[in-house]
Length: 578
Image (cartoon, rainbow, N blue to C red; front, side):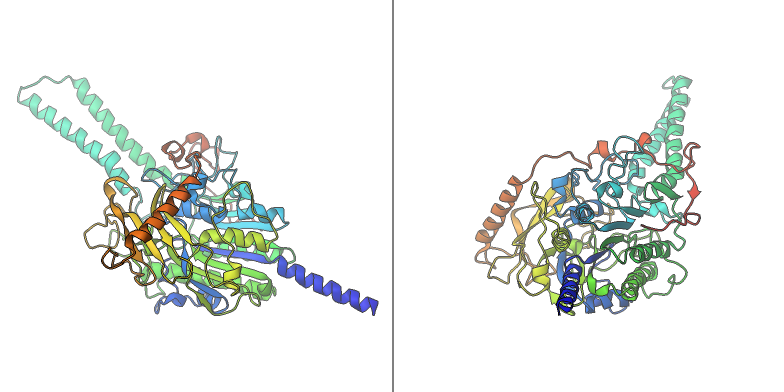
């Protein structure tokens, strides 16, 4: 009997330990709209695996990105904190890193959920997109690299996927090139022509050295343009495995398949120990890409092909969990870093952005279409399958949720803005712990969301809104993304007020006439914003101009012969993930 009791006790403790230390698979899409997956209402884009995930878990219908741009949103996701707290919120028009050799990035002082879980004995991996910086002072310090933020293993793109990474797909720098290259060339050409005409008419005598200097200046500008066009792709679009470059420039051939296989291998190798896998897809950011198995197969062009390939990848990960009998002890999360990029239209007029469903706006603005994203969590036997929750939640909530489930205490030396989701997911609470949420457009507080206790209303007040162009459009097509200050926005005094619970499309701003408590509601929200502002501290701006610009001494290159930077070790490198 004593032996039997000991055996039962051992089995109970083993099961308790398994439940208390689940595995985590966090799947993060890039620029996927809430209207794209079938489980969120899309009838023509095939996403059977994302839909399978939703059927087996909880679907959040008011899941919000902490920022509508890649870099700040991912910083918030990793740290559970508004990006302004870590200096990952830009004061300029450029809100993300665009060069691999920038010195800004997620500060080493920030604590990611990967760091917490690594300290709890978890194996940790990030496969796919990082976009939170690489190095600080020299190309080998890798101070912002995933391995410096708690991940044991990294395989993917330290930067982000861009049109410039794929030949023939155009450039995200078109507007900047027009301003910095074509305008100066036009000025030089007009100056040369004017001086030549005046000289021919005998009005002035112009030394030949003036013409030489102007031609030389034009040659410099053209040379800089050619260098940029030639070198940008290899210098910024490359894959790394841990600290080593494995493919420069990056090839899109079977890229999703390669990264998915590595993610599956990581799970297989760590099946007997607790693990954290962050699979950050390069889909759906442009340049769009898909393998031959998916190209031309969807009803939505290149965007649909890429979305269906990403869904296939989700299915491969779910299948591996099932095959290894890990599904019941693994919390799976699927989301997107922000809404679909409405303004992504090719020179041929083909839309390369997704669907934000009924919601206004998209990526780079805080209308619901820019921040309301898919949010699916599955943990069989722990989270009720098929549940739908319409309470306000944030991608910052993953940090405290994962930390608590892994048995890690939260850091006490800083404010954590996320809230543990488990009471809501398990039905122990029917209200979000977020009474207020603050929506930032880069550095600037753009809007406040208030879900009062004992009320079904969800108020949202805008201090400013972007100026959509052309008039009547649903985005800022002239600038490719909406900007956050100056002439590009309209300031509102009093703030623009909506009740999201009644007007999710944000079409009908409230007035003192239509809402008797108009000023009382705004007063409460402005007071909350003021209290929130008092919790902020001055920190170094990681997205300042000085931190954004390209620094040659930080440039990583897989060869030592100048800036040729070409290698392909992806096929040769047989090393698997840890």
